[in-house]
Each structure stands twice: as structure tokens, then as C-alpha cells.
Image 1 (tube, rainbow, N blue to C red):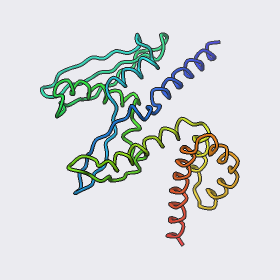
Image 2 (image 1 turned 90 degrees about the vertical axis):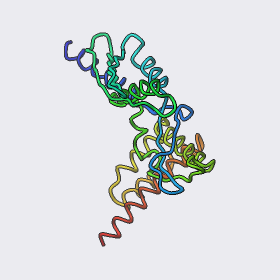
Image 3 (image 1 turned 60 degrees about the horizontal axis):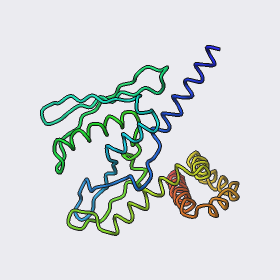
Image 4 (image 1 turned 45 degrees about the horizontal axis):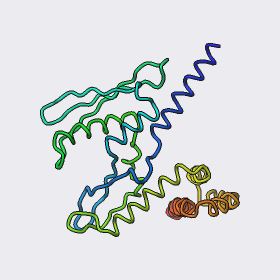
Length: 228
């Protein structure tokens, strides 16, 4: 009985950890220019502090998380402590926030909780170049152009759809596990029926999976040609 309860507890933790790490709906994700290089720049994706709080309320529960701030001159430390369930111990993780250009001290505290939340896995994927494919986007007076915003929005939407649609997750996992060009093409042929079903259900998600497939297939083919 004790072992069974332990397994059940671990299952609760695992599920809630995954829920904390889940991607945010595209309309909650914002971005700004960073790493300027002439007339182009990379984009930094981010969410608001309120989105972090909402995720904690939703997954952990309002009585199972708390914050503690410590001021350090122009910076502050946020200790974010959560409890996955009433039977579990509290888990604390901390990070430092700095004053923002526009919101000053208020922005510092928001920055601190967001950074501490990343330590728990919340929004961590936003810092992965896999979302924006490490692309540079065109600028218009140090701000992203309309075309850039549209491209970033499309990529954020693609990422969200690929990680919330079960067929897309299944296909993407299969394709990314292939280590040779012949293997990925064989996998594609064997899963044509699933691909066809996904196209009928959600054409945009199918397109995102297709683009991911093409990038990895091209990379595998290029590596094999270099090794010939």
C-alpha cells in the first residue's frame, strides 16, 4: 500500500510539473527586440507576471504557492515557493529581477517573479530558440516591422499548436527521433494516414509539423552528404 501511494504521489508531481511547463496560449505571449544587428534583431519572447500567477493558481492552487522578495540595491530576489499537494514538502527556487526601462521598481518585482517561475519550469520554453528557429527579424526604427511581427506571431502559433495537438506531438516525436535521412523518410511513409487526418482536423498545425519535418530531413541529408 505504501509503495502504491508513493507511485501515486510521484504521478501527481509529474503531471503538475508538466502542466506548469505547458506552453501558454499565443495571445498571452509577447516579444521585443534584442541582440540588435544593423536593421535586424532577434526576438525575446516573454509573458506577464500575471500570467505566471494565473498558471500557479490553476495548476498548484492559490493556497499552495507563495513569494518572498529581498531588495538588493537596484535589484531584488524573488523566492517562489510551491507545494504540489498538501502531502508534499514546499519547494523553493529563487532568481534576481532588475529594474525595467519603462516600469522601474514595479518592473523589477515582475521580472523577479517571472525569473523565479522559470526555475520551476514556467515559460522556460520561451527562451529556447526552437520556438523562433533562431531567426533574425527586420526592424523599423528599432522596433519590429509589421512583417516581422506577423512572422513571429506565426511561429509562436505553430509552436503552441505542435505542443498541444496530440497527433502533432506524436508525429513530431517520431520525426525528431530519426537519426538518418532514410529513417525519417520511412517514418513519413508509414504515418501518411495520421498526417492526412491531421490535415483534415487542423491544416495550420499540419503545416507546422510539415515544416519541422522538412527542416530535420534537410539537416539529416546534409550531414550524410558531408560524411560521404
